[in-house]
Amino acid sequence: MTYPSFVVGIAGGTGAGKTTVARLITENVEDSVTRIPLDNYYRDLSHLDLEEREEVNYDHPDAFEWGLLREHLELLLSGQPVEMPQYDFEIHNRADETVTVEPTDVIVVEGILGLYDDAINDMLDLRLYVETDADVRILRRIERDVVQRGRDLEGVIGQYLSTVKPMHEQFIEPTKKHADLIIPEGANSMAVNLLQERLQNEVDGDATRTWERGALEKHVTGSRIDGE
Ligand SMILES: Nc1ncnc2c1ncn2[C@@H]1O[C@H](COP(=O)(O)OP(=O)(O)O)[C@@H](O)[C@H]1O
Ligand SMILES: Nc1ccn([C@@H]2O[C@H](COP(=O)(O)O)[C@@H](O)[C@H]2O)c(=O)n1
Image 1 (cartoon, rainbow, N blue to C red):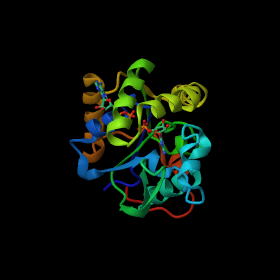
Image 2: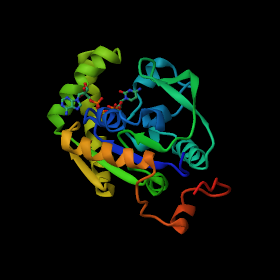
Image 3: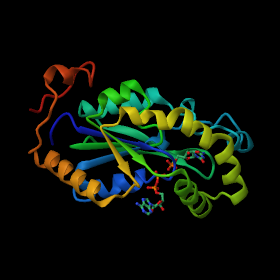
Image 4: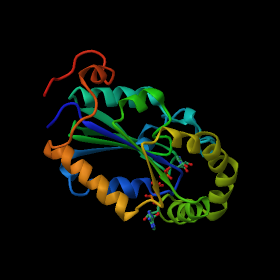
């Protein structure tokens, strides 16, 4: 594989289509891709009971353990594996198990605040923002949360109005300015095809990297593998 990996960040509101875009743009190069869902870096809330965890604002940047995500990205970029936490939406907490993630040619970091943290943004080679109208997103979210995340309609609507919507406006939407590309409506086929081609070139070693060695140093402090 090529070191360091090519790192793609995908941000956007809940239900915008981030996960779908991440899956589609990497489907031809699956074995060469590491997916890092930001959800896995929600803080460990084991010190709270379930009722307290249900009240947490999961759309505020403070809900995430940014230091751990930075550390894991730096390790992967220096060619080392990491133990990635897993998240369980039904209990609003990290799961007991972790998953060992190996470095690969391409790393995709995906989540509502994927373009929020300055240090993470510096590690990204390509920044994408998926933009979908709020009415479409809430409809998708209701369906998903009820079917897959064990929520009821009243709870989804209450959470949307009290935290999801205001946090989107205050923190998520403004990160669009960091994007290299804005993808309308999620799985937009022209955008997906172009990005598939770009990632295929990365994996085949045909892509021209725009940054130079000096710029590379900012990715990782300390030792790194020189594979070029
Ligand atoms: N372009 C699209 N057209 C129709 N449905 C879509 C599109 N993109 C995503 N979806 C659907 O919307 C839902 C939410 O998409 P998802 O990728 O999980 O969003 P996010 O990760 O941003 O929350 C899923 O059921 C997905 O299949
Ligand atoms: N315990 C939790 C943790 C997060 N959420 C919501 O998940 C959304 C982010 O995931 P997407 O796939 O929709 O991007 C975010 O808006 C949180 O409100 C939750 O409901 N419960």
